[in-house]
Length: 207
Image 1 (cartoon, rainbow, N blue to C red):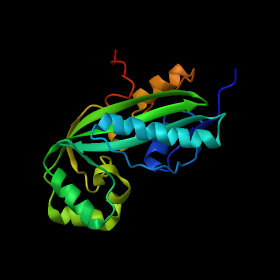
Image 2 (image 1 turned 120 degrees about the vertical axis):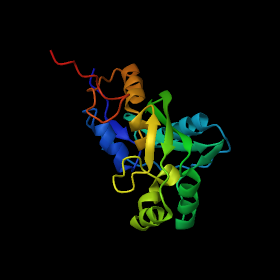
Image 3 (image 1 turned 60 degrees about the vertical axis):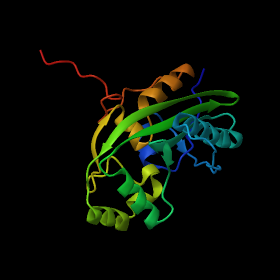
Image 4 (image 1 turned 135 degrees about the vertical axis):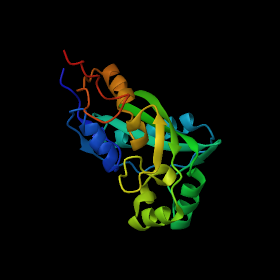
């Protein structure tokens, strides 16, 4: 049976790069959905929104296998989304500075009426960056399309001091969880070559 056409329901270049690391051919078709949800649980929010995004594109492409994803940053029971302004980004980054928080990324796979959903979660410790660094990052435009107003992979700002768990999850797509979900649809993927202690394949020790 031929493999279904795969669609990534996201405009995020970071998710596109991560999905490409699995060796899959896919189309990008961003979903336009209402991301408002009255819930304080980061897992429920992330999974609900990921599934909502996948369903929206499935309606347009019912024969495709659609992948949806959503990332949530949680600090002391408060969910931090994408900042809508420079001031909001400034407040978010100052609030996160030097503190631990959790990043949860929901991922959903849909093929017609069949659906599967899961998530990744990572504990993140931010470094004690200065106000001048915050202002430079805001001036670069970096915070505005990212949950929590930062990117773990940003080499210039480098806001993260340490993390426990999946690096890919913080970037925006937990590849290990996605590979598990895809396998339930009969889609086998390559072990990704990514800098992640959870998703990267283990290397054989030298003889």
